[in-house]
Image 1 (cartoon, one colour):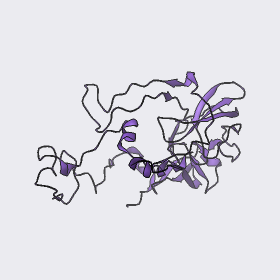
Image 2 (image 1 turned 45 degrees about the vertical axis):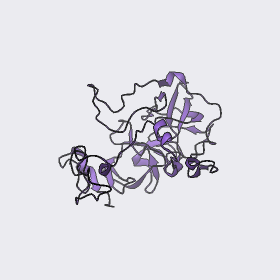
Image 3 (image 1 turned 60 degrees about the vertical axis):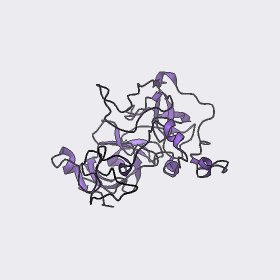
Image 4 (image 1 turned 90 degrees about the horizontal axis):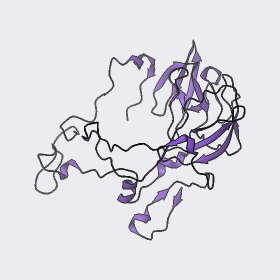
Length: 277
C-alpha cells in the first residue's frame, strides 16, 4: 500500500494500491478494448433502478477472456496492467502457436515473461489452467467454472480464491470466500493461485471527491430525510431509528432474512451454507 503525508485533511488517511508491479508505459491493446455507454443505474425508460450511481471518470472496457479455452497452446505474459472496470489486475498474453493475444485475470505474483498453459492435466504451476479433477485437495484456485466450458464465474475479484476440499464421484467440493461449500463438476476448469491486487481491500478513499471519480454518488441517511421520504425521517434534531428492523426507503425490511429463492435449481449443489456473521 502507498500512504501520503498529511498535507490536507483528505490526505491524512488516504491510502492507494502500490502500482509499482505493473508494466511501465504499457498502453491498452486496442483490438481488445471498447467504450461502454454509461447508464448511471437507469433502465430503458430513464428511471433510476440503482441509486448512488453516476458521473465518474471516462474509462475503456478491456475484453477479458474468462474462458481461456485455447487448449495445449502455451501463452507468454507480455504485460501486467490496471483495469478500471475491476479490482484485480489483468495480464496481456500471447499464444505461441497462433500468435493471438488476449487479456486474462492476473494471478498474484505473475511476472512478465512467464508462460502459462490451459490443459486438462497441466502442471500445478501458478497461472496454469486445468480441470478440477487433476487439482489435489488443499490447492487454492480462482476463475472457477460452474459448468464445464462455461467460463470462469467464481473468485474473480482482487485477492479472492477458492479452496479445493474433495474430489469424488465426478464432482469437486469447493470452499468459497464466504465459507460456503459448493459442489461442481470436476470437468470444470480453474486457474492455480490467488487473484492479484490482494491489498485492494485496504484502500482508504480519503475524501468524497475520490468516490465521485469512481462514479459513486452520495448516500443520505434515512434519519436525515423528511417523513415523506423515508420511514426514519422527521423529528426535531437527531432521532433514534424507532424500529426493530432496518428498512429501505420504501419500508421493506433489509436485514436478517434470507433472500435466496428456495426453489433455485443450484441449491442442491450447496453442501454447506455460509456462516452467519
